[in-house]
Image (cartoon, rainbow, N blue to C red; front, top):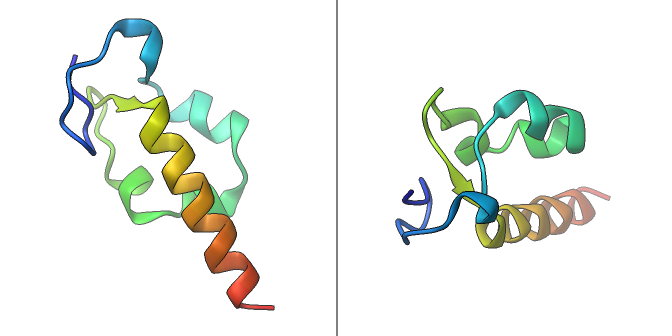
Length: 65
């Protein structure tokens, strides 16, 4: 499987494949991220990219305070 974001080949345990699971795991600010919104039904995103997006969302959230 190749990550939708970084394009690197990943094993099945290294990726997130379901937007519903992402939605249940992360808050609405994270879900509203452009990359997350663009995930298709068959897209996969690796955990490393998820964590990078999480840091980006946190940083953007703090800049609004």
